Every structure is written in structure tokens, then in C-alpha cells.
Length: 413
Image (cartoon, rainbow, N blue to C red; front, side, top):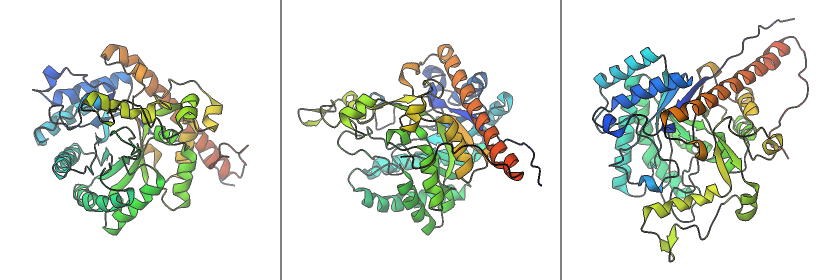
């Protein structure tokens, strides 16, 4: 009989810096951009995080999408109007050493397949600056979207991906980086009827995109940063998604996690279905797309009429909702990751992404206990899952002792 020691492996818990857009006042950070990163590292330590996911974005004066048209504005905590050089990197690395808070990755969420060539080039140039910054900071990944060319069909977008992303991933490879795709379908990104505006939204497209990458020798540079909130939005559940990847031979694709939930409104689904509100949203005026960017925010009714983002720990425990795929079953999420995916838990990042509207307070002191609570909840859930996995799949298994019950099953019907 083999006796296996009880050795649970816990994941690293971090937070996306977009949780507090202007932690450092704009009048301070614009002339001294790295101050924003230093302040966020200190704030993350106060909140109990191991790491930060460093949010980068075009400066508000440079972006093509006005903030008033965004459901969840991204933060340019990492300001790259000027190139991020060795001197800047050393300043940030010194702050990391002082606070003992690391970086999970650099995150830049934008439409990399934009149909306008000049706009696309502007975004691509910025992405390459993110690559350079990540390399100087010693992190191994960038997190972002694929996006969608709005003038092309989904199938045509595969060709667009090949043209645009392969050169970009070759640049990532040259710097020793991986590009992790966050899978939000971004239904309200643009007015109109398109719902899938980020083509890397589900296992079927992840596999199709990865095959293109493999063909060009950059398969190792393409990975997924999985966010269960988007699975709930599309009527999916985490365990089944992970099972699909395992069944198809792609359990290695998921390489990091956003920890953000989604609570589905049964009445909203009954009223509009999972496609969300399709008419009379307010993004069109007199039958045409409104000239007022603030009206474009109404395009997000494709999503928000049927669900609301959850900050982990803020939603009531609801076993029935878990079984109906209407809320995230956090414990099973962490168990399924260990049971079905090819990950090293001790070197895998859980990044809390705060987008729960009523709690998205943009005041440092008021937000701090909310983030503290969510980060602590996330850590304890992961620790519980790690202990269950080690006990059931290692300790008991080594001694030939059966595990009781069946647990949540993939493709639950």
C-alpha cells in the first residue's frame, strides 16, 4: 500500500487594478505615471492580495471609445504614452520588492481586429508596448481580447485573426510571452445586432484559433484567461467547459483565471432570452445609431437585462442557481480546474475582477473592506478546493479508498 502525504497546492490570488480607476489622482499620475503602479501595489497589500493584474489602456485623451460608452471602463494604471524603459521598470520592481506583491500579468483589453486599419495599428502599437513592459517586469503573460472585425462574418474573422494575430504572437514569442485571451463575448461593445464581438469567446473558437496558431508555430503563445462570469452569461457551466477541453485534447489551453461571477435574472431571461434586449434599447435614435456616445452604453442591454456581475463572495449561496447555470459554483469551479485541466495550481493565478455595479465604489477607503472580503473569500474557496482535491484524488486514491458520492457532473441535464 502506498501512503501519499497530504499536500494541497494553493493558487495565487490577485486583483485587476481596474477595480479602482483613479486610485492615484489624475493630476498626480499624469506627470508621474509610475506613481499609479506604486500606489496600487501598496493598496493590493492592504487588501490582502498576492499579486496585481496590471491594467494598461490607451490614455483617456487617446482612446477611440469614449468612457461614457463603456459599461466597465478599463484603467490605464500602466501609462504607456512614453515607452516603458529599464529605469521605469526598476522603479516598479523596487515597489514590488518593498510591498511583497507580485504581478500576475499585464492586461490590455481592446479590439485587436478593428475594421479600420489605422485604428487597428494604433492598438497594435500599444499592445507591443505592453509586451515590452511585461518583458522588462519579468512577467510571462499578457491578458487581452481578440476582438472582431465588424465588417466580416465570424468565419471571415478567422482569416482576419490569422493576418493580424500571427505577427503579434511572433512578437510575443520573441519576448518569451504568452497571450491569454479573456473570453467575454462583449455583446454591448458596439450598437447593432452583433452579439459575439470578441471571437475568442468559447471552447469551439478557442480550438479553431489555436489550430491557426499551431500552423504558424505560435501555438504555445496562445492561451485562455478563463472567466466563469461569461460562461454563465452564455448558459454554460465551468465543469462542462473544462470537460470539453479535456475531451478534445486541449486541457492545456486555460492558463489563468479571472474570478468574477454572474447572477442571472430569471425574469430577464424569460423576457428577452439569452440574446438580451434586441429592440428599443436606446443606442438607436430614429432608426439610426445615435450620434451621442453616451447612448451607445445602451447596447449593453444585450447583457445587463438578463444578468449582473458578481464580485466573488457578494452573492448569496444558491445551490439551485448553480445547477441551473445561473450563478457560479465557486467550489466546484476550483475543483474542476484541478481535476480536468493541465495546470500547476501553485503557479496559477486567480485574479479578482471587480465589476459588481452597486459595490463599484470609486473611493479608496470605502472600497478597501469590500475588496478585502472578496479576496479573502476567493482565497478560502481555493484552499477548500485544494484540500478536497488533495484528500480525494491523492491521499485516498493512493490507498485505494473510494470517494463518496458523484459531485457535480459535466453536461448536467
